[in-house]
Image (cartoon, rainbow, N blue to C red; front, side, top):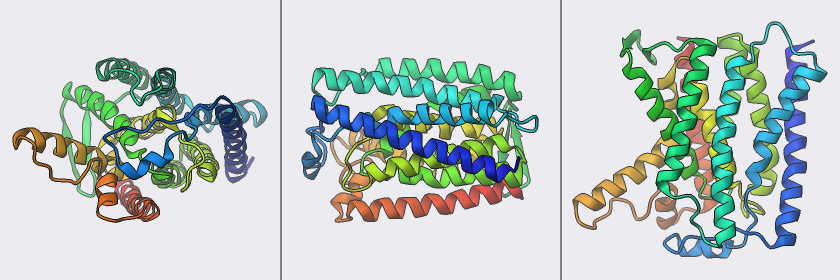
Length: 331
């Protein structure tokens, strides 16, 4: 069976399952009057979004698992496709999605925009990261060598690699979560990553499992954006953003090229760094700020950028850096 044919079926399966699942979540949320609470210290103009249904990200793991179920059961799988490392990535993303679900549930239950405490959330994410490292080590045999993109230079950091990998996993999962602050921003910024995965599987590693994961991810994101683009009818919540973060962070390690996440996750990195810089500068200077508001997308809003402009620019930037990541894998 043609790989493009399989890709199309997986894309359509993921798209349709996400579309139907989000429809159901949206209907239940409206009926039960379950909606997003907006932080008091957030942008004042976001108050109009309060009450918008959330937890649409429930559809993400359902779509991914269903798409691969279609591949394995109905399409018969393929001896040429190794799904073990990809399955490890999906499990890592699922675990993070469950953490996000618990966080979202507590926010809704308590009628406030605070769910899990930061220590509890970090502890659960740490468990997920360590478990993933054990699984992916058995699946692909992690190399402790860091490959520097675009230059013929490698650095073996030995056992420190596992600490680096742990920090990368936790860091980028939360970085994607920080990016989920505007209508369609996290989903649109992740679209180029899905396309990158598809190309990587076909033309770089000749490992179709990455291509099929890219197809499933692309399908669910396109479907979700039908509801999440500005003005959003539903938010993905931490359930969805932590799932996407798990995919993005997990893929970089499964490819044994961890530093590439700096490129294909460039937008998320900038968002996270803006928060780190803001907090550090605030503490050092006793109350002064570099950005008008963090994360970066809120700073740009304060500078007069519209939500649509920010989403468009961020998506284009991540598209460009994904192309650089692809080139970095080829040369």
